[in-house]
Image (cartoon, rainbow, N blue to C red; front, side):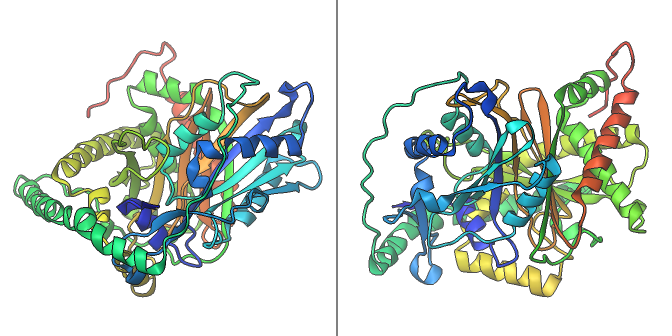
Amino acid sequence: MRRMGGADAFMLAMETPRAYMHTFKVAILDPSTDPDGWCFDTFQRSFEERVHLLPYLRWKFAETPFGINHAVWVEDQDFNLDYHIRRVALPGAGDHKALCDFMSDVYAYQLDRSRPLWKSWIVEGLEGGKVASVTMLHHAYVDGVGASYGLEHLYRDTPGHQHEPPPPWEPRDTPSWGRRLWLGIVDWPSGIMKNIPKVVQGLRQKKALEKKYEQQGKPVHPAPGMMQQTPINKVLSYGRTFVCDAMPLADFKSISKGLGVTINDVFLCCAAGAIRRLFLDGDYNPDHNPLIAATPFAGKRPEGMEWLGNFVTVDYCWLHTDIADPMERLHASHKAANEMKVHLNQMVEMNADFSAVMKILPPWAVKALTWWLREKKQGSLSLFGNIALSNVPGPRKPLYWDKYKLDNWFSTGQIIDGTCINMTMWSYCQNVNLCILADKKVLPDGWKLFTYFTQELEALVSLVPKNNTQEKVEA
């Protein structure tokens, strides 16, 4: 039995029948690197031999009675791999658009809470004989950095790697209701009470810092309470739109080097430009104000927890959809990102950041907050701001599942009431892979937004000096 951390429990408590808190982990496999070709049974046997490498794949959650403490992970005594791995085939030519349509459909279902919170669809019939492993994995298990570690743990950088035989698995008994209640009470002082004084002091320091900024005439740091409701900020419906595709990493590096910015600055600038175009299509004037974007940041992971748990925190930055000129928007994005980094470091040092606050919130408080945001605010306020943006660096070397080459990898987070679009960028080898997850009623056609993003990227590439002389951008 293992008790969840605060951020893990938050991901579980935030879930509703319309707000799904699972992530997508999509591996595109190329079986042509195996002389024997693709074989589903071989893949499944290989998967079974590796389940022990990520123990949480056999864990389900159990509530702490009365919600007095975070839930616990327990081993599923009825674990059945056949339930979690499903085999399907795409109709027709099996192009990438058809795969994204399939993923849009399967994402829009809650995972069964009586079982481990993951499911993999092995999708055959893709173009070029490729196969997709489409995995829905609940965010309560692990954050993006931990998922990247798990990816490199399950795969190897050489083909045909032979894993050690798995040890025999003997699941432990699930603790009774009474024992979970008792342990929840016993753990409460060390798990929650220990952090309350730190967080309260941190929030006081945060308030004092904000007052100091105001006295010095400095601009207020963006926060969810400052967001303006736009056409993309609504209460969620049941349906989802999901699209993903790859772009050359070389384009991002060229802009970064040539214009003196970071790859993340380029991401923010292109995302802002793409949303701006979307607003103009819908007759919404984007010049009124910038948006507020929520961005996760990796925190320090305790030793032995590289593969498990959420150790991210969240901060906010201005997303300059209000600026039409690409170069001016890039400079503003650079400035916004730098200000966010400085602010985040201050919040972490004070114990006033998102992850610190999540440690002390019991599940019932998170559920009450979720209800209030959905029923009372109706999309005008969200913990993730107007839009969720994430940029995760992935493996730089090709990986293999046995002899199957990992041709590409896509990953995305989730959306919640009020934040109906998530744009996640995940690099792999020489690709930058962009995923767009959205509420289907807010964004019926995700490819439109994806195309706008690539057009903004092309506009920045065209601004890079031909001699690649670096232009300095003031922080």
